[in-house]
Length: 282
Image (cartoon, rainbow, N blue to C red; front, side, top):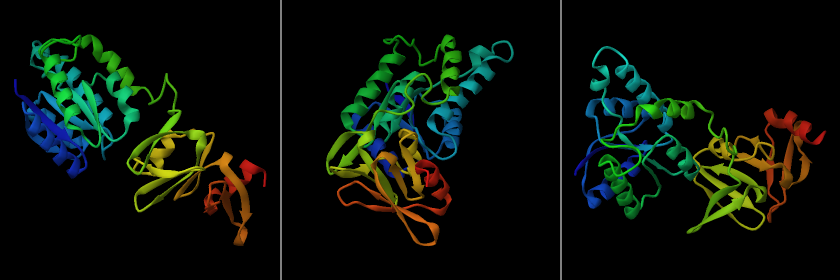
């Protein structure tokens, strides 16, 4: 069985890498590629692929919004006129491809076959392809022929409309931080601060520092406990429990001296000065 597939990812290098691995695995014909969620929907409607490798975070529509839109359109086609149910194309199988492993659970919530964590691994790509073939052959509880059962549509829409993190902890207790070649699980409470410089987010604890795979501080903040972490400056997020000293600066501004090894001094933006005063009753 040869599967027709789309690759949807806003990073050209990621698309190229996945295409190379799929070619080496075999049994998959990549019929088109797209760079965002809008293109994903258009390409799916044009090609009706068996399988879509779908990035989670993209400009326009993210991966979950793409699925929601596909389901909405699928139901609209299936609900109009005699024979419409028969004419409605089955939804493709979805494999999420993402650098953010916190989306793994939600990927399975929305009936994805599998998810691939970047950087891609040939063995995992092959496993994902085999899972798709198994599901389409009817060797999986989801049913044959690649169709999402109608009984699951309402449940999927509810999951997709649910605020992310509802009915489960809003943030993971630990964060993955890359330190050289190691991926370390770090307790949020141990993080002193995070800083972004030229698109790279540095995460600092009292004992070491490393890099986050998040692309923006906004993404990182979504993973952190809002009761502990505060964006004191556009380039810094601080753990308020690791502020060693508030240092008055010129023109009624302040700096924060953290309790990391270097006792790093972090500026407080003027827009955040009021928040600082509220936090510490200054």
